Image 1: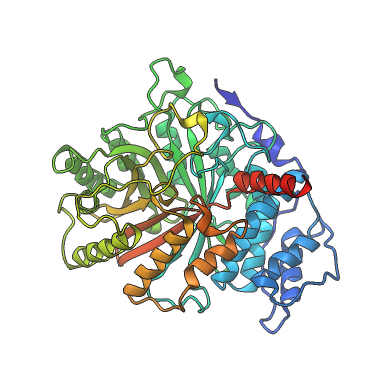
Image 2: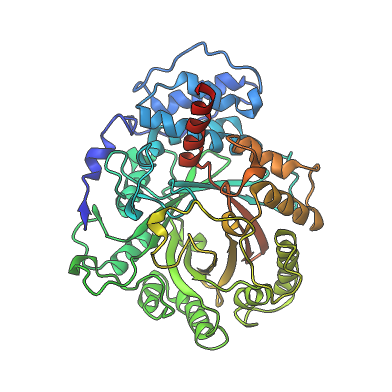
Length: 512
């Protein structure tokens, strides 16, 4: 059933969204200022006179690396219990990752105040849903946020700004347990009021507007939530304190009975990418060529790859930096098949690709040491018994043991660039083993860092349990080809719902 939500009324609800004036450009205090002085200065610049900060908070210096977060926790007012819940369960993870990456103090403050003011409210209710419509499929426990960091292969993890922090939210209404319309969410966060002077408006959101209009041409209002569609809003956090948005659409599966207003130009789980030709031409004519390369691969060398369209995304960036990204899912996952799909059956070749595939093979061997042959299928290394029942009988996707790829198109580039996502909450043995495997790979390719730095960083970001207990925090790890080389990215869930459930279970045992 379709829903139309009054998003404007939601943005005006002070329980979930701080009501602040339009903020101007932040002027960072001098670097000689104390951490507390910087935090208060930036927070006051962002909030103006709308909220009174509690003064005189006392926080131990370098309090487990979370000094900025702990100052803000005491200084900022509590908007609601929902806001407090996601500040404690999710924003803390973000704070730890920002501190680990050694972002400047003013940037850490800016990003955390933005979360407090704008993002807790789109994380949905504090109680886990029971139906597929009430659960995100981007995390193992159905919660809405997934954090990630891009890890440069050469940067020392003790250096300033040593990795890029990002996250995505599958936006849900905090009261209704229903999805919010992704376009309406992006419109708000990109606006002067919603963006608080932090969200970059460079380049506009023309691509996102064109994609949504193409995908759902009969939509009567951007506030309508398309039944069966998953929206995902991405946030790239800059060391300057600014944020760049990304937008994702996972359209519904095919439905012959769908209402006219919600008929889409394409559906998930199709191998036919020809519907993307008009939108590629509309975004920029040069995007048609890499699409044709991908279509040709799926029709010929990749006809047995099992790749099916899952999701489309773009950045909200200037034209020269923007990307159109097509995500494809497959149940097939030997090393041989992965290299075949990453190189489009050898269409993408040359020294850069040879070197990248050699390093991808090293990563694969570290993550899956049992796969001693390139034809060995990946398999879950643990009992998967916690996938929500709502997904058990549904079409394949995130909650099945498959692989996800994306192929990104850049303006003026004749070929797509590929990335493979290893869904480690399904294929991993446990989160600790995965982290140790990643560190082993990074060490092999020459990345600096003391032994244990990578598992330690994750443990500090997600301290709610022993990483060796199971999988679920390390949701994925990816390897992507870029115009200048390759990069790797780790994806993490704070397990908002599962952590809360386990905390309640421990409390009951202690009081029994």
